[in-house]
Length: 299
Length: 240
Image (cartoon, rainbow over all chains, first blue to last red; front, side):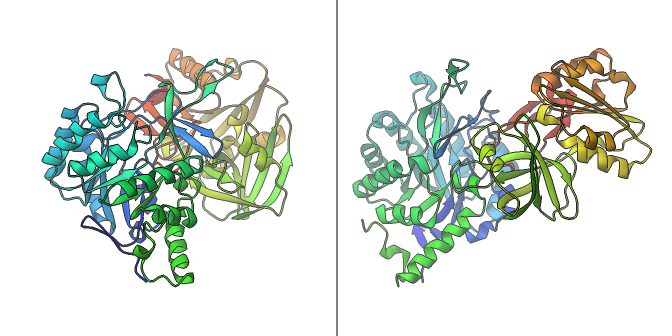
């Protein structure tokens, strides 16, 4: 049976990757699970300069999900290149480097530094707040996102995948724009902007007021968005959003995702992503399907 | 999966739970516990109260949905344990000598039974003074009495009022942030703040250092409470 996926030139041994922000740079998880059994790993979101992240509560549990407000704590692009890249590259799995920014210059400087190193895919996180636009995410309005995608594409030497925000005004228009501007693929969805209030303190739980919702609670909406986007573009799609088991993963694949990413479910059980690989294989075998590509986008 | 060997309600929502486990556990480490399917999403970080050849014992307090589910389990039921995680006290302490104080508040008393027990084995000449603060009924005083040379308790007040930090070679603390901060101030005033070691409690998701939701600010930059800690030098955390 074939589980291998060619995603715009990046060869995934199976369609299961770890989502950015839930696996660090792989060091800790690799002591618990064998990361080489996965298709890929998307690193903690980088920014040009090191960030210490947000103050206050960073995690809050909801029905069927979690909200997080880590605030992109990361070592910066240079710190990553100096201290983490060699390890990521040593893993026998597709290395996806996730990059965010708070201004266009941030993104471009980061891309320039990453152009000089070997990596498999650059995943551009356009969900960060745009400091010039009063903190609204770059990925909400298609025309604002276009400038970043266009300039990033022109500069980036790597396979470029744009990670879409589900908070976009029109996520299919956003995906089409990425395709028009030359992106090699899109990944979706990032977390949903959400709110929790501490009724005793009469204040938001999070210092930043809003935080990102992930986990099983968002799965059906994420799946719908992946389905819509996969129908709107010809470039390949990485799907994610609350995938917690092989059945969820197969749904995303049937909706049109060539590769899926597992995020929050790794917190339920760090070996869950590997169980998902096994579950997909069993499904293919039970249903006498010889190649994962036979079911990609069939719904 | 681990089988629950023992589960007893103490008082005020506190429980003692022993589950089968054979890992080598260091004092001050914790496990991530869950006894349900995918929701609630997060496992619960719980300190090790004791460990022996049969299993590991947890002292926990029911505070939300997860601990409530755990509190309903019976001996013979299964529970998922991930761990042991974290550095523990011995990692940070170096060598122990003379007199050591352990200051716990609320469910923060949990790590000190095993810590005192192991410390006494490792350093037979060390004396341990245990200071335990409770808001309700005092818990496990016989057990704590067995592993310490002096046991001082407080109910409803400030346990930190009862300690003279300058008497000790090392002071270990775990409990509410306000209690630990007050103890740090007291140590600082006495000129012995470098002798204080704190075990932090923080909201966690992964428990292994990947997600950064439990980051804490220290004089040495951000640290992961779960993987770099939970034990830190008091000055690293509270002198900021």
